[in-house]
Length: 470
Image: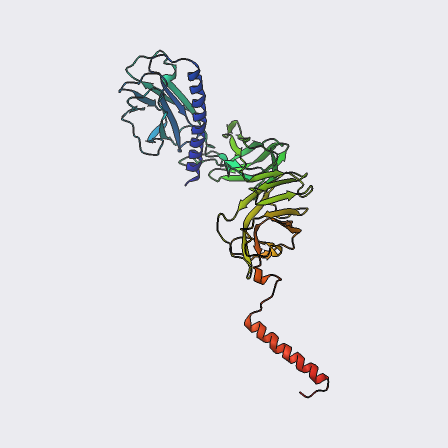
């Protein structure tokens, strides 16, 4: 997908989301007041704030009936396009083609038919193309009207308009690599600056522009600036990020930087980031970039004072004070369920406890400052056929990787075994069968034969040394 099209559809999605929010508020207002027995048609328009000459953009048209009576069959929506703009195509909200029923000059008409009372929003996404010779700073106003043969007491919402400003920087934009993040995550922001070449060359105009980027970062109570990614960097002072430089026409410039989400940010909070570009006498503001903070059910936020919790009674986690220096997200994930079995080291049998632990603070934490205690709880059925005192917690870096023993347990008592670790990974509980208790070492046949030969040879040497005949 071309960068321009990608940014265009990103703007459409954002505008659609904002439009739905606005419609929800409008409906709430309508419900607060009793409706008259009438048809009450409404039309809304949304479009990008800036568009480029020679480029395409999408206008989102919404229509509905907010009245208490159904509209007649002749209900129609008419859109009037401004000079310098050409109609390309139209689609419904599912992406299917939805061409106008009639086109007369700059007017496009759709016969939408009967709209039931309180009917859900109808959508028409209209793709337009700006002429290549339209001057910069030209205001392109798209108008819409919804009408029928029925009489309406309120005609104020039957018309709407939206204006987009022609700007050669319209292919510029900003986005975050995720729409949702968790405390302790890292969000990467990408800013694209592109001065689009007009068809036919620069026409004697300079081939570059002096640009200034200003980005207002979220508050220090939500994020921490972690640095720039890539070869281009700017400066940061407080919560203001700035960059200055010359932008060549037709040669996009990309800046990336990273923000770490602080562990104190609560689920449901929204991290908002705003940026804008300035050049000469021109300026454009990017759409706000928002990220919603979430927290999975199996996660816990742990600060320097430590924390202790249990996961479904199977594993207790005790993080002592000082194990982490800043609030960190801990996550627990079971690796098996029910009667699933994990293959362990040779000679060891699975004790039906396997899980993965992870910790995140501006990326994954691989080492803790103090040991963390993992207490694995079990019942008689989980360790049937195993010697309880032989239970050991083993770890591996991932599926298919070899197992390594974590170390001797802190304690083993009826129904539980406790171990300490300074790192998180995948863990599983294994034990030795009754017959193997005592860590009897069974060498391979070749190794045992070699050991026997060596033992006989050593015995012969001892006899020879004592003066006995060989």
